[in-house]
Length: 374
Image (cartoon, rainbow, N blue to C red; front, top):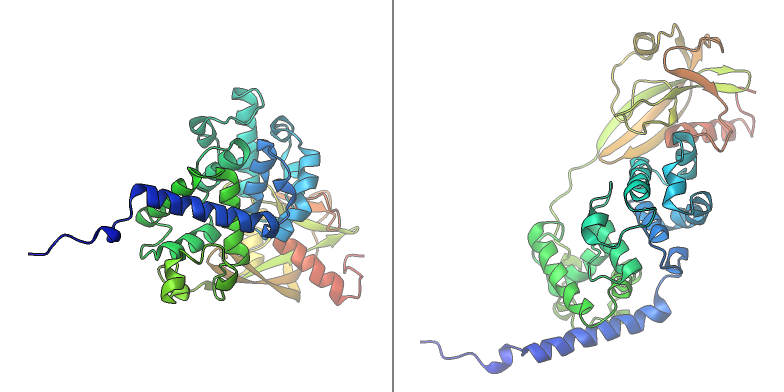
């Protein structure tokens, strides 16, 4: 028979509680001088924090810095965004990508305006029911704005926690997320939830890096199991990624009176509501012959002329080569074609797609500052 295990193998609840308190103190002690200074951290306004968290999804922090304050100047309250039209919304979101997030934010602002008197609700059930609110956004906003003990599990936090806990489960799956959430809940019981969540985010962004973690600078290294075993680069555990699919598609450019032919992207297509260039489609082409496709979908009778340029673009799992051809003859201004309109490519307030802007930039640079439509 196996004898009883030694008592020291089972830390008491008091001992574990003191560990969590020590971890929280160490993390906060590091965060105060080392945390990132970002404009959305200078406020407890839940609307501003909500806006920042939606902007930060799948977007570089530097890009969000540029747009955040300007967006709030345009839409200082949910009711202001609720009234915004598509072009105004997409112009304000320019450069942030993933425009569906902007529409969901506006839908959420409309619900807040209509059902909550224009005030962002602190009730978890009410806030979680708003359009576009997932577990991460809910945790971030409720903890930072209202001090509620909800975890905010972004990629940085998942990496920190996976290494700290030596987590064999995928942190994006239920088992892994639950274990991480339990650890963070223990920290929340001994420290301010919103500040601790931000500290964990910054620890992952600045110290606990994916390929080269600076473990010597980490305030949690005394408790980190991966550091103790020298296995930091093995975590987090993730399934193998499917290689991106290489795709080639085509768009056409027609010019009249300093304007370029644009297609208003309809609902249920990627980048709906924005202005794109007429073509075979993105990310996947809907045909092989540009002239045939444009005649079928828009009623255009044009021939692709010389190829003006190519640009590369990535959408989720697609790496796209976009070939841009001159369309001849350009359709008349008065009857450009079904779903088409002539627009100014240099108007910064128009919601041109990222692909269109890339093409305009290449054309401008290739002609030493002169657009081919001048």
